[in-house]
Figure 1 (tube, rainbow, N blue to C red):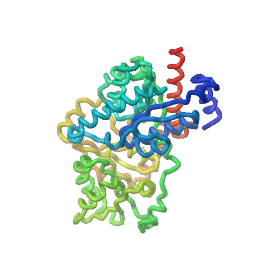
Figure 2 (cartoon, rainbow, N blue to C red):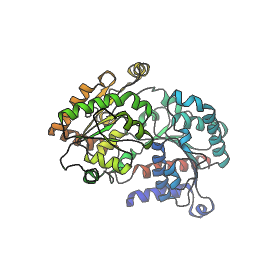
Figure 3 (cartoon, helix red, strand yellow):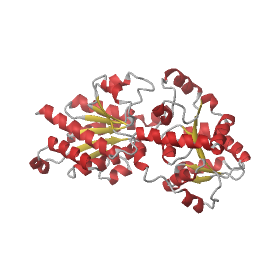
Figure 4 (cartoon, rainbow, N blue to C red):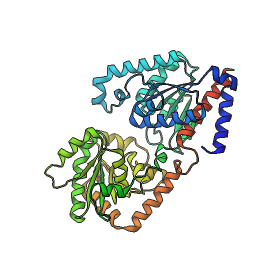
Length: 414
């Protein structure tokens, strides 16, 4: 943390509690995360808070990363990591029980602030229950709903029960501020990974690849539902690329529980991908990558950090596709494109998610040096917009924002 940032942090702390009170009343923060991405955000936030207030205590729900920073989770966070109606319904009673348990525990502890992280379906229900019983507990939500893309009325709805919101993207605060909800842009956690951009040479050496051998990264999603829709199209695309570039090798970074499914899928297809599940291998493969084909999502920012030229593709079931076409307001789905307001990363979505168009776009990136160089320049410009190069990390900025909310609450109560 820079000297200026530390001074700002010290000023915030001084406004929360006088020095003699800090010893008598440590800060208590209640955090709730429901997915791996939220666990990362929560851990970064906790580190930022501890750097300012070493006397802080954490409570709530979190995964391994948040627990490593000093939280004892009320229950395994993985219980909340479900997606889609088919997955939620069998566990609905259990999830509703966890919502009640989480809210009840927070109300009993009466923390200086409650910080919920992403997972709005769970987190917002928890916050509403807390506010129904005790409006004086400040409630901050980390990761704004994408009201700029669809369902813009959510901004007004969340303003009725939240006290503050932390956003990952620079253009998001005004959507909430117009409804009287304070909002702070803190930056995207992906920029904190710049020091771990991967080692392409190590990856090539580990898997016996030649220095100039093309590496084609295939990223068909992190959920089984995505694999069932995309893996077939992605594998056909890979087959076309391999027929044009015989020396290329296919690498598929995935999660451990998905590896057996992927390996079985490719049996007898004439494609022998390197399937990796280790995080270091994942980032090293990106660094070694000549080009990548990825399902839409945060992974595209990871590829941008690694300077890996790529395209994105996605296919939905017919009902979801109809909803997307009629409700989504943004012209792009890729964050790089959204940030720069132009099609830096080719998007092959819905009907365009076919092997022919995808392989053509990939081969262009693999062969056209100017196209590759332009993408890399644009990546850096977009990453700067979400915090790359800022002297403060997103976690540190989020920590200062949370402490600022606590300070304002203290002033109002005085």
